[in-house]
Image (cartoon, one colour):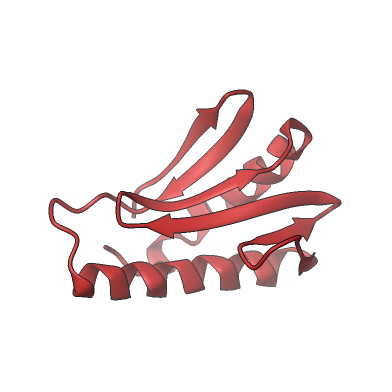
Length: 104
């Protein structure tokens, strides 16, 4: 499973998965399964509360968002630069569990 850290300005982002050449219904189902597994891993490892919308949650006082679309893999990012430390922790957890994540 490909798991990388990127930047959005000063904020760190994690991308999980790969971009398929042609995104079909089967790819979308696999992405949804991957997204669910990533969320389950995060919830198992951290004390998570609901964020300001359905695609975000709070960890250690920092709002973290997760997205998925047909143009890129699963994305996880902090809403604030101060959340970069949480992104680093999430990246570490996902790397440890990469073999248990469904592949795209």
